[in-house]
Length: 235
Length: 240
Image (cartoon, rainbow over all chains, first blue to last red; front, top):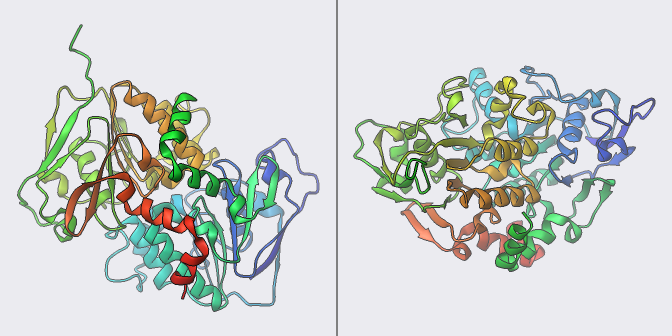
């Protein structure tokens, strides 16, 4: 399992991608929670870039998949992973998946080609996107695993997100660790998790109630008419 | 020339004819008894649980409109296919046109933006940057801003999958602009935010079929409200 991730800042070119992204350029050391660490931030804030680099540095394929799957249909976004130093804790990692929302479609095809069993009765392709995602989490994720998930709420209904949280809670109690990027105000509320917000100021640990997505969602649900009035007047 | 420009609404809706071929969608309770699906002249949402059939229904509509079922515009039709994973439901679908077909149409599935980006290599003139150098959500918004034009019929499958809350709001702004320029949207979504688009029709799919519901009664709105009201209490029950 991962205790912390540090960036080797020696000779980095602050003007070049991905260090031109404030959250990446200002990174020194990120201390992970032993159970659940959440990354929040806007599109383009660098959370997918960072989470992918951490996953690759931890031995996963940039495309996503389990730690034993090795197949490449494209190179990773950046070579950031080469500069990341991962400090592990004493717990050995027995299992692990890196899942990115955007490539799950390809992973389903890949799993089918491998004819791996244990995904429920239906092929992942015959289930809906959200169902296949949940099947994987419910049936294949196990104890003492390292799970790196990039926006796992992507395919899920609110009920699906709640099912995911329940499963994470079970697995965390049995020695698994999660590093999850998310836009979901529900997933972000995971009890006791460390939340890091990536934005133009860098990476900042932020209490749940102070995250923008929670504040905005609350105010939208309280009075969407007023919210949209300003939004559309602003266009 | 008056009358020659296609304007929204393009579709009043569609009918599902009797099944002639067996298909796994026969097993979807939500669609079993459905004969008619009516669409709003501007914005219609399909909502429901994972597996309720909302994406299947949207996909069938896209196929009946001859849009690529993996997502993309007309020019992408059959240009790339990772695997045939759509149903035969579109064969039963009879479109109820309101007038001329749209000048522009597009079916965007968030889940296949990755494939779309890989195959959009020749389109740098349309996009600011190659799609792979953008984050997932940014590329989605770029498509929304650059590819969606007036006089269009647009189908989105869970577009929030790729977007932050601000991204969803930006998409809603763009939709609001386009609705004023003779566009019609059909959107499957889990998002309580997108669903708040003013005056939209919300069609809810569950085991009893399809029915129209109000915003406040949509499951994602009720649940998100209840959750944000008191996350601690919600978790105590969920994780008990």
